[in-house]
Image 1 (tube, helix red, strand yellow):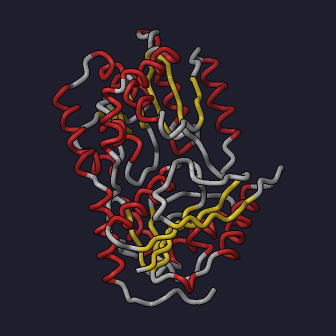
Image 2 (cartoon, rainbow, N blue to C red):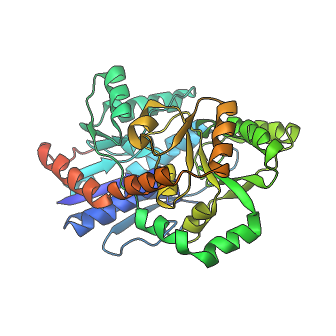
Image 3 (tube, rainbow, N blue to C red):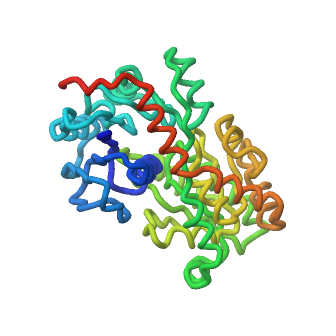
Length: 366
C-alpha cells in the first residue's frame, strides 16, 4: 500500500509530530509511506531526524513580508497542490486544513475544530471537512463535534505517544540539571503564545501563584505557526507586565533537549480552550510531571483522573500550587501508565485497518 501523509510545516507542532510518528509506525508495519510538507523559509528538513525509510517530499515555500494571513494560507494551498502527485498513491491522508485543501480525494484527520473570521480561512476550514471522503479524529469528543456540525461520523483513532523518550528523561541528570541551572524552578507550558492555548489566563494564574511561590517562574516553549498572533502576544505581555509576571519564552526547543525540559518542570500547565487529544500534556505525564488541564470534555475523555482540572485562572493557580507543594505519587504512576498505553504501533495498525475498510479508489485527478 502506497500512502501519502500530508502536513503543512516541517516545524514542531502537534499535527507535525503526529504525522512523522505515524509515518514511521506505518513503515514498521510494512507500508510504503511518503510525507509531503511545505518547507517554509528555506527549511531543508523536519525539526527532527526521520526514519530514512520514510520518503520526504518537501515543497519550498518562501516567506513574504507584509502578507496577510488569508493570502499566506491560499498561497500555501496552491504551492502544495502544484507539487503533489496523487496518482502515485493508494491512500492520500491529509493531516490539516491546508493539506486537505491542496489535494484531491483524500482521508482527513480532524485534530480539532477551529473558528475563523477571515473569509479565506472560513472557506478553507469548511472544505477541509466536507470534501474528504473519509475522516479520522483522535478523540471521541471531537468526533462528536464533527457529527453534530456536519452529520459526518469520523473513526476515532487516538494519538500515540513516544512515552519511552520522555520517561527516560526522568533519569537524565545532566539534561535536567542544565535546564535547572538556566531556569530555576518553573511551571512549563508547551505550544507557544496564542488564544487557543489559554496563555492570558495562564499569566493571570501565575501572578497568583507567585504571590506565595516566588521560586516558580513561567516558562513557555514552542509556538511555530502560520498564523499571526502578534496582537494577542502583545496583550499577554502587557498583562504580564501589569501583574509583575516575567515569562521565559523559549520558542521551539531542540528535539533532543525537550524531554529534559519537560521532566525538570515542577508542574505542567495546559489551559487550552480547544484540543483534539493533548499530546504535549501526555508527554509530560510520561516524564512524571504533575499536569493541570483546563476542564474540557475532550481532556476528561483522554486523561481521566491522572491529572487535575481547572475552569479559570483562580482554580488553575490553586491546582498548580497544589501540584508544586505535594506531588501525588499514585496519580503520577497512573499517568505514566496511561501514557505508555497510547502507542504509535497501535495507532498505525488502526489506520491500516481503516484504509482497508474504505473503497480502494485512487485519488481523482485535481
